[in-house]
Length: 305
Image (cartoon, rainbow, N blue to C red; front, top):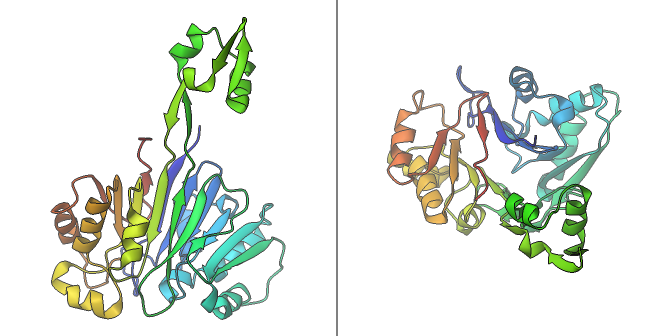
């Protein structure tokens, strides 16, 4: 059975706390495992969460601040230690290529796995060969080059059991019909449209370290799940603007306006030990499926529309 869920490995912003590790998020999408922003301590959090190095098929880094990238060194060395058999694509802002090289080559180790760097120098499609979804990068507003990521599954068809029975269709011929679009059955032509209905693809967006900008709205538009930073509360909006971050209220308003189905707030400042005010503030604007991310939690993507 396919599995699509977010595994939260860490939720702290610049400084970790007793309750929150630095950032780290694994998106399980069927056979894919996309690791976003592995901050310091990600390798250990993976062990607590039951995530193996082999689960990782892609890595996506939004920007090269330490809380979003210092864990890359340990994760990469673990991928090599475990001799992960598949290639692992790593996308990151091209302007941070120097930091990527330093992290991947931080210490001596045996290079036994294949890493494929995918530096990004402009907004647009990300070259992730073989993924069952489209990946796009969108520029955000932060003191260093930062990109958010959006995963979009192409639309498909949902086969209707009652219609298939009506036409006497079962077994391998159903797959043949899906491939060809129509079949000759008992002297008549049956089209795929007669036995199926459109099935919208799912979507996921990942928005870290940014002020409000057009890119935030573009990434969030009509997504099934939006993972977005909420470093501050509205009362500290001046700090959010100064340092290039969002408040819980801002993130929730974006999600409400964008038609987001599941909203996950994360990346919390150390100044807030208790996050109940983040939940209350976001709940004033977003009335859908709202989550205040906690370390090691698992959040499923919502059912298909």
